[in-house]
Length: 495
Image 1: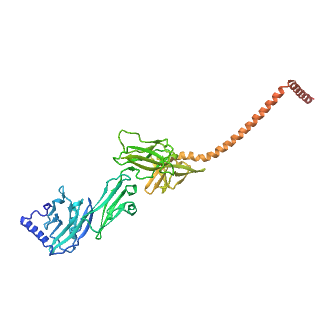
Image 2 (image 1 turned 90 degrees about the horizontal axis):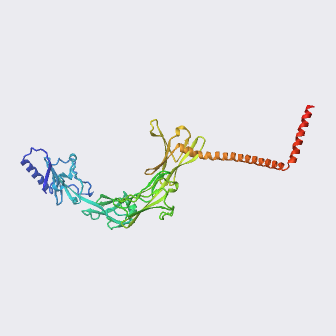
Image 3 (image 1 turned 180 degrees about the vertical axis):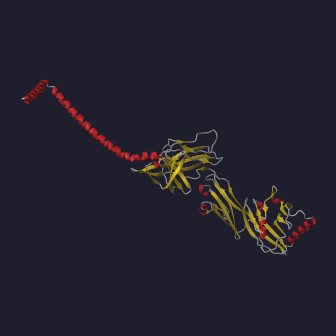
C-alpha cells in the first residue's frame, strides 16, 4: 500500500541514510519471528462511528525504539514512524488529507505506542499488529478490533406498530454473550413482552411508550466487554410525551393542553374529548368547558393540535383526550388538568391563614410560599420565602403585596398560583362577615317587630275613632261633660 509522509524530522538527511533506515526497519519486521518477544493478543470492541484505542504497551525499561509500525491484516501499513522521526500513514487512513489514526508522542516515553482510530468504520474491523523495533529486537503486539452495530428497523416506528432491534459484531465472535439494557437498566421485564432471537442479538415487538429510550447491546467475549447503543424514538404524539401527563393551571388563568405530532406526521383529522372521572377509556357525555378553544382549521397542515382554556374554572379539572388519524391509524394521548388555587382556612383578629389547594396532589412533594412586593424603584422583588402548604400571615402593612404558592415534584417545579394580600384579606373577612351579618339581621328583626306593634296600635286607635264618629250626639254629650268638669275644677281653685 502506498504511504504518504505528513510530518518530518530533520531535513538534512541524505538519500543514503534514508535508504539504510528503511532497510533497517523492514529488516526488523522480517526477522521479528525469530528475534525479540511478543505482547499479548487482546480483544477490543468499538461501536461504529465512535473512537477505538488499540493498545501496544511494552516494558518501560526497554530501550528506546528504532521504529514503530502498525499494520492491518491484508491491508498493509496503517501508520509508522522511522528512527529519524518521519511519520507515514496509509492512504486508506486519510480523510481529506487528515489522518483518522494517530499515536500520541507524549506516551512514547512510557513505552506506550497505542493507536487511536477516530470515526471507526465497519471496514476497520480486523486484526492489527504493532511492531516495535529496538536494539534488542522486535516486540510484536496483536489486537483484534471488533465493530458492534446496533440498528432499529424501521428507524422510527409508529406507535403500536412492529419493530426490531439487532446487534451485530464484525468479525463475528463465536461463543460471545449478548445482553440488553434499556435506559441503563436491565431490560429483562421489557424483553418479556418481546420476541428474542436465540442468540439474543435481535429483539422485536410492538412499539409502546415504555419501550422508548436508549437500548444498549452488551457483548462479552474472552473477558472483554463491548457496548453499543441506539435510541428508540417512536413517531406519534410527542407532546405530551406519555399518557396521563399532568398540566397544572391556576384558577382563573389561561392553560394550554398540548397535543403535538411528530415532525412530518400530519393527522388527517383530530379531536378533543373530556373523559368521565373514573372511566379513562370512555368519552364524557358532558360538553367541553365553555372557555375551551380548539385549533382553528388552517390551509397549511400543522402537527400542532393543542387546545387552550382561556379561563380555568374549578370544574374544568379532569382528564382530556387528544386523538388524530395518521395513515389510517388512530393515535391518542390522555392528559390530566390539575387546578391550583389559594383558599382561606381561618381568619382571626390579627392574622389570616392561607392554604395552597390542588385538585390532584399525587406528584407534589413540597410547597413553598414566596412573598413579593414592589421596592422603591417600582420593581417587584422577593421579600421572604416560607416552606409548607399552609401559611399564616399577620394583618399589617409589612405583609402587603403578592403571595405566590409554588409546588414542586421530583423533577422540579410543577406550577404556581398567586394571590394579592388585599384579595386574601377580603376573602378572609368573609368568615367574620357572616357573624356581622347575623347580628345585623337580628337588629333588623327587632326593628321590624317594633314597627309592626306601632302599626297595630295605630290601627286600633283608628278603628276606635271611627266607632265614636258613628254617634255624634253621644260625642257631644261626652264633650260637654268634659268641659263642665274642667269649669268646676277651675272654679274650685279660685275659691
